Image (cartoon, rainbow, N blue to C red):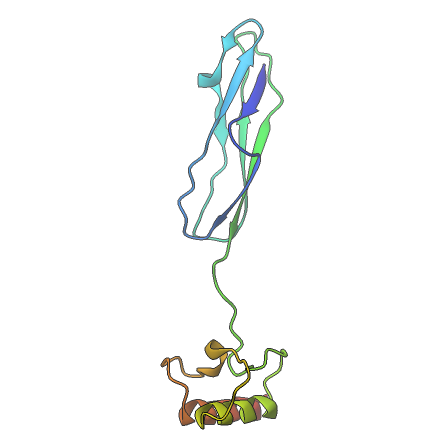
Length: 141
């Protein structure tokens, strides 16, 4: 017997998405279509990022086994990494970021900056509280 996957042998989906397996077909020279006899093993937990394997196996009426076929499903994290305080995206939180934030608050800064990283307390406003929190974070580092 020969097993043929429906769809790709490798898939990538986002964490939390719904996974629907496309399945496989199985044909045998003597028995013909034995798709209904395919045994599927493996699970995909879409709430936990990682690699998962689904294996398809089948044997014909004479006990001849097909070469098992696998599908790999990669569940990717949809978490965005934010480095609060790193306004110039140089990988560091330092006095340069404090200077940029001060200028942002005073509306004197005309360069580009990461607004998500500038909002230190997550209140969607960039103000003197963020400035104080950024200075505190630098002192803790």
